[in-house]
Each structure stands twice: as structure tokens, then as C-alpha cells.
Length: 93
Image (tube, rainbow, N blue to C red; front, side):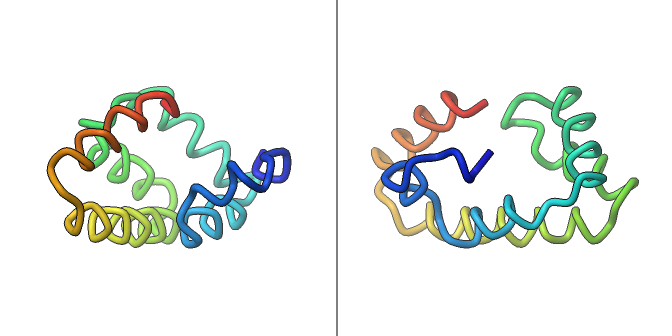
């Protein structure tokens, strides 16, 4: 799916998020689809990663690493920017 994104859209995503997405194998994609269908809201991210970990601990570790990077970026933003990023994230769920 990433290959179909125009470069200007792809450039909006952090490098490590793109690398993570491109690294997902077919088997990992099946696990993620199954888990994402069950845990579809952002508030349940911890439970979602725990469910992935039961099936694939390495994939869960990679997810945690990407999440940590995203959280670190958000910590440097103003409250208004964080609120905006949460609003924008809704469009990708």
C-alpha cells in the first residue's frame, strides 16, 4: 500500500514509521489485521500490542519502538499541536 502513496503524502510520515510498514511480512500483516479488527481505537494501543505480542513477540517489539519514537516527537510539541495530531490521526483509523 505504501508504494501507491504519492511522494508528497509519503513524506508526511516519519521515516521509522515507513520503514516499519515496509518491513511487515505477509504473516505479520495477517496478525495485524486480526488484532486491528479487534482493537480499532487509539485508546486501546497497549492492549493491541499485547495481543500482537502473544502471536509474534518480535513484531510487538518493533511496534513498541515505533510508538516510542512517535511519543517522543509528540512530547516536543505544544498542546495545540498534539491535539491537532490526534484529530488528524482519526482520519487514518
